[in-house]
Amino acid sequence: GESVGLHLPTLSVQEGDNSIINCAYSNSASDYFIWYKQESGKGPQFIIDIRSNMDKRQGQRVTVLLNKTVKHLSLQIAATQPGDSAVYFCAENIPHFNKFYFGSGTKLNVKP
Amino acid sequence: DVKVTQSSRYLVKRTGEKVFLECVQDMDHENMFWYRQDPGLGLRLIYFSYDVKMKEKGDIPEGYSVSREKKERFSLILESASTNQTSMYLCASSFLSEAFFGQGTRLTVV
Image (cartoon, rainbow over the protein chains, first blue to last red):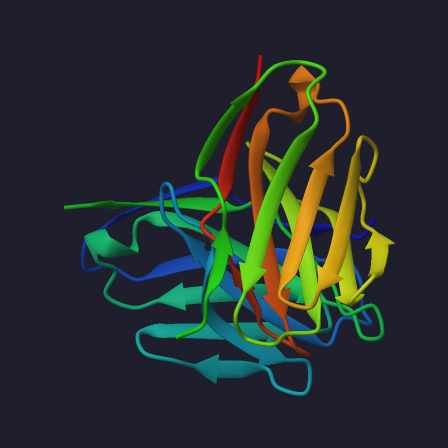
């Protein structure tokens, strides 16, 4: 199958700092990417997405960067808050297959 | 609000039992998915369906089957549950792009 991987399994940050979560994907044909947040005991929730014709997209406190040259995706969270503590997944969607492949997840711990 | 509902949050079944996991979505989405989630392995696709009565194998279909008799409902079936199927199961639905997830079913096979 396709591989979508994350560089760091666990990330600890101080409250108020910025967080950066990274993801590598393997299929250069992937044209759509999503970041999900999964809190303990819940299903993944959509955070932000980006299409392959963009290299940056901003949301509220979150920014996704896409580098197609090296097949790398990152999620930046500004002014990280305790409520941001969760596992974060990146997912890629390959056209024509219309299914998602997920990375193994990065756990973000926010220290007060 | 978008809703994907899985019938159970927690299930405990015995080895060899036939197990049904139900998922219902209210968004009229064409595509539905079943994933399992295990520590360190992320979400792995078991089966997906892009229309009623249509199904496609994902990456780990062995030991599972699915049923999609109605557009809103996608069932995952463990024909004969085994302990290595103890996991968190997540259902999702999508139309063209973003996938919406249910809350998950934690299945323990003893």
